[in-house]
Image (cartoon, rainbow, N blue to C red; front, side, top):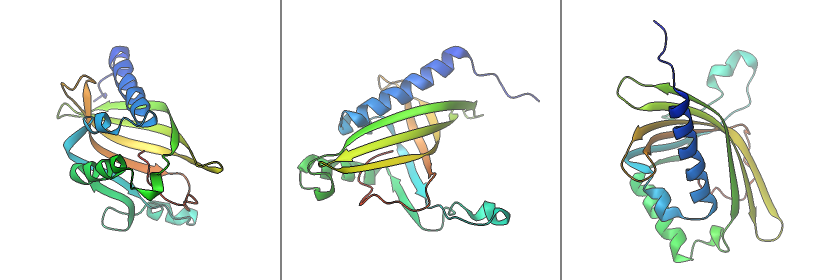
Length: 174
């Protein structure tokens, strides 16, 4: 049985949602960004290991292993509240970020949600000379919502391409 085709209109709608989300993050509108997160959110960034080709299926840490992020909506709210205090040393002064999203591929799920795979490039500059570059893939589950943006993110798994994170902290959102 063939997979249902994604219409150009739906492709455009989901891409515009992802671009709007990127703009909210880059503009540091974190309180508004929180409205794009479902109440049952799972925000997960597993670690990556450099292994031999024969061990490729072990390259990404499993859900029950160590992760860089393993959060829910309430922990994301706490992170944003902390940023808003001006007392989060890792973000004072705040980072300047630029999220670039590409290669958006969509699969409609049987429950009316959408599985969305996309690539990202994330540039972060902080202070005068701190520059970090992150590249990878995001695996999102989106569902329709009446929040003015059309969707919420129910699941986000972030696969960084790099195995070693050289940034002094991961105080930004992907």
